[in-house]
Image 1 (cartoon, rainbow, N blue to C red):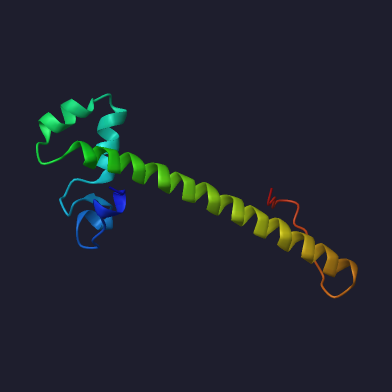
Image 2 (cartoon, helix red, strand yellow):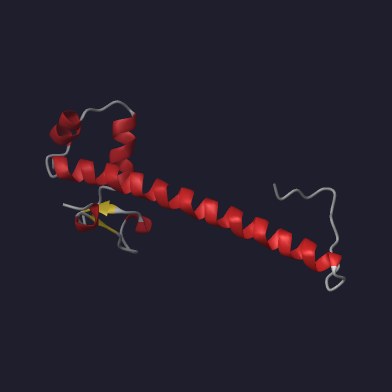
Length: 107
C-alpha cells in the first residue's frame, strides 16, 4: 500500500499538515516519536488507532518529500547557473548591462 492511500492533507485540520487517515495525528508527530527513540511497538501501544502501515507510510512520506526537495534544489541551481551564464553572454554582446554588487553572492 502506498503512503498516498494513508496520508491526508486537509486545510482545516492541524494547519494543513499531513495527517494519518484523516485523524489528527500528523506525520511529523510520528516522525518525532521515532526520532525520540520510541519503537514502533511503543507508538502502537500509546496510540492504538495507528497501525504498523501508518508508521511505515510516515517514513515513506518523509523519504519521498526529501527526494523531491533535493530534486527541486538541483533544478533551481541549474536554472540559476544557466541564467547567470546567459546574462554574462548577453553582457558581452552589449545587449544587457549587468551591475555586480560586491555584497551579494549567489553561489
